[in-house]
Length: 220
Image 1 (cartoon, rainbow, N blue to C red):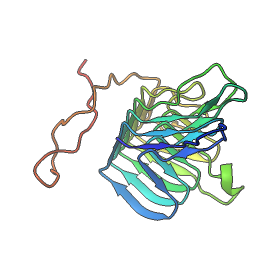
Image 2: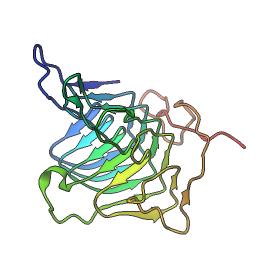
Image 3: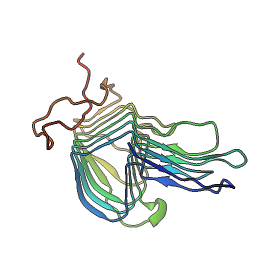
Image 4: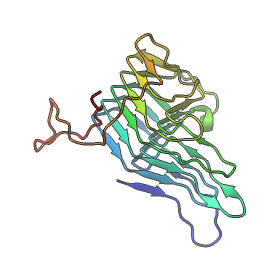
């Protein structure tokens, strides 16, 4: 559990909070078998909160067999000026990510608010032209992944402003239409009845013998 919280003593100057678990500005070939859990990215004043679990402004080749659960991205609040935007409770990508494979996004939040601000992509938010301009980007491909139980008043599970395609075998409960889970093997709008994050066993143990915490599906 980590926190990226912008803070300023005195006048509530807008300051952004980005990358509660990890903020990447460089190049990462792959993120493998990693859990981002209960991290927070909190803005200050009217500053934005972005990437509660992971905020990517660089390049990540692939995210594989990883879990994003219970992370929070929340913009700040100023009584006079209103609130800041909230993007990507689990994962925010304003750089480049090639593939997301066999990964889980559950229970991540961009909390809704009555104030005038954007709250998009509770699970995944991807918008590489947000800061970098309209640079060539082939878009992210998502395969064999689960998105459910995330929270945002704009696209609870997934929001994208650039090409976003499915490699098949995904389950997405409430994705925005900008995230194209349209492969024949995809399930959209189906509640997977997820269980809390726990040690559910594994085939490859971590050093010391324990298993990476994962999210299991309830038996029906």
